Image (cartoon, rainbow, N blue to C red):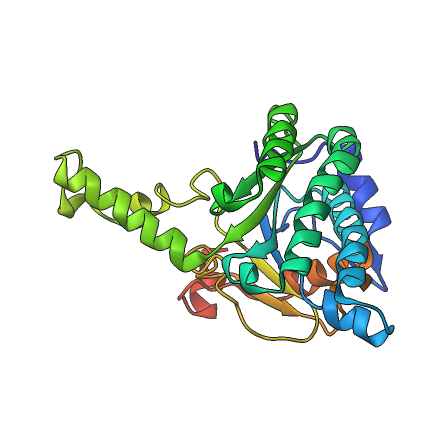
Amino acid sequence: MYSDLAEKDVIQVRTKFMKGNTIIDTSKLPKHIAIIMDGNGRWAKQKGKLRVFGHKNGVKAVRDTIEGAAEIGIKVVTLYAFSTENWNRPKHEVDVLMNLLVSSLKKELKLLQDNNIKLQAIGNLEKLPKKAQKELNEVITITKNNTHLILNLAISYSAKEEIVNAFKNISKKIVNNELSIKEIDENIINNHLYTRNLPNVDLVIRTSGEKRISNFLLWQIAYAEFYFTDLFWPDFRKKHLKEAIIDYQQRERRFGKTSDQLQNNE
């Protein structure tokens, strides 16, 4: 699933995604990018519009960003589309967001198919309106054999809830003698999370200038790099994704080791 790009694709990516003298190194791409799409409401307010105007324009940013990720060769993108806490927003705004989800899935199916993108979703999906569940499941089924990029939507999602559910399921297996306490390790926990079939997150991007995690993939981002931008989500585009990846590639990822240890292993 996570195979390298063909040589001609690498050349095309190197040519297209330049920033000054800096290019994206296709041998050091983050496998999994998670994005907290923040600032729709404030973007709309700046323009004297209602919050829902920002959400509708945020869809354009999603489209452009996913196209960019596919072109660069990113294998997994998780978008924080709707948290469990978002259910507490005004009913009208929630209704608009759910309707946007349905309409966007219909409109963007061609984009997913044309770019060989597989759609997945994580979260408490049973809380979604029936129509949204139906559209989501249909697009997931239609795109299930696509292999170039996985678009993973976090909808009605809570990282704390995900971890609690994982431990409940692990506990059931212990009670049923399917698993012993001694066997519990990181791999066991990973295998009981929503993201069990995905690599851990390498890069977290958050828009709007806020610098917090907001209950998003708490386990999976343990060693992720963070990139914050003051841009509101509706203004985020391919070029900004490229800038985030270039910034990521200029960092030293030590995973608890020292710089000397990493250099000696080279």
